Length: 333
Image 1 (cartoon, rainbow, N blue to C red):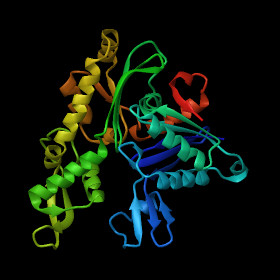
Image 2 (image 1 turned 90 degrees about the vertical axis):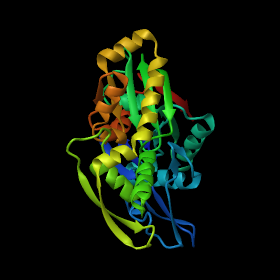
Image 3 (image 1 turned 135 degrees about the vertical axis):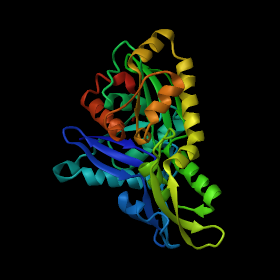
């Protein structure tokens, strides 16, 4: 059995050939400190964030696209494998294909491989996320023309120029969805003296977040704790305020795109100007992000279809055609 996993900082998706995406869960694990056992994984664990007593700790085992907590990552992978590997097939160890950031170090690679083996896999293959994202977005990566992919996840933004099945040049920036949430939390704290949790910040970003100033802004009521009085308080924020809040992290991403474009060979630059760049990952869901990038770089910009599942779909396509994509696979154990 073959399983493709998009091991994301925010969400993890599991893909099985001929079945498609069979699982989409938050990358969160809840552990009971009294008996050191895993209590919940995924959505159930995410709902516990900010609401647990001292005896329960909620972990997000991946930070900035790589494993930050080895043991809980193993528990999470084991949970994913056991959930999808059912029936007669559970007697066979599966082969895993896991997406990792393009800028991953050899130590970080080894950590992913060892976690997969410990969780019950027979073999672990690793593939670079920009390649998987491009395949999932429907880009013909094996053609001899240049394609640019910007994959904005939870922990990392991957910008890559791809040609002939490989990455010509790329950059992994550890500024992505998480940093946008932190920027929103800090902005609300500074402007309104209101403390909000990470779940609320993410909600604000999803519901009214925008990358460019809007003439007709949206509004959202949010609840938090007044830092002066220590009491609950409700305020109303506009989408234009959120645009100001997230401007700095977005500038970092734009600078990263410009750096990659600057180092791209002229022939491939011409291809990218013709075809435009494709934005994938959860960050692509931020309203008006394509127009912001297009305006800042002068390169046409398009959103991938179903941007959240591009990497997972890419793992599926790669598992179906392993011989075609051999050059794109980095490591095997």
